[in-house]
Length: 349
Image (tube, rainbow, N blue to C red; front, side, top):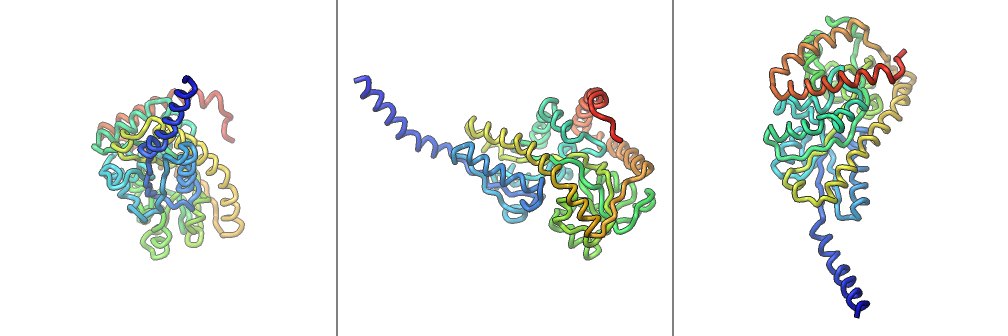
């Protein structure tokens, strides 16, 4: 009798399992702001999608939509929050017009590098503040950092920039808080999606641009039109990219699916950082040897001008209470981190 009862119980479990799994299936339809062909920006998401399906045994899947195929990049946040779509992948700085503090969760001029940024997000107050930002602004989303890259180039120009005066009157594509710095220095900035930048340079709508790391910029062909590429990327020493999930969808998801998504994104943070670091030297070498690009380093005068102007921008933006709350917390964390950094890391030559 005992064997029979065990057999019946096993049969019941096998019968129930498919229906339980069917009820627990989740498909994330995920438009992205960056093409999957761009390494470190768009390329992490197909890998995340693959891991979600594998780790869940097929009960959790993600369908990735290239930019503008389902939702335009700058409409992703609104679409996820409203439930028009249940997830999306972008960068928080794209929402600066709606949420002043959002660029602080993308990239900060003279801000944290990738390791320090992740330390603040995961083991400081970063993630609590990140979610609080969206909640306070009335957006019905769950946010998860899902990729990070190291420093970007700080611009492609058609002529050398030797003093702040050389920036005055330029029309330039620029991102985030760095764009506000450039505006104060006399640059007319615009925030164009990656796919629109080359055409804008070609037709003269802009004179110069920044976008991302050398290997990513290479895919967009900036070197064909402008030949002076400046470093270091003072405006984006690290850049974070986010997966947004509709709040109702997140709340209704199983604990297993939540854990899988959270850990897939944490793994993607490491993977995207490693990918970005691995492929830049080839792009830099190719630019110099084959594309006629001149690599330039900002003079101490220019870097100080950028730094001083950023201090002005930070003070102005801190008139927004939540911006100030986030920046103060980040700076407090960085002050502590600096003790470790100065003692533990080799000095830069």
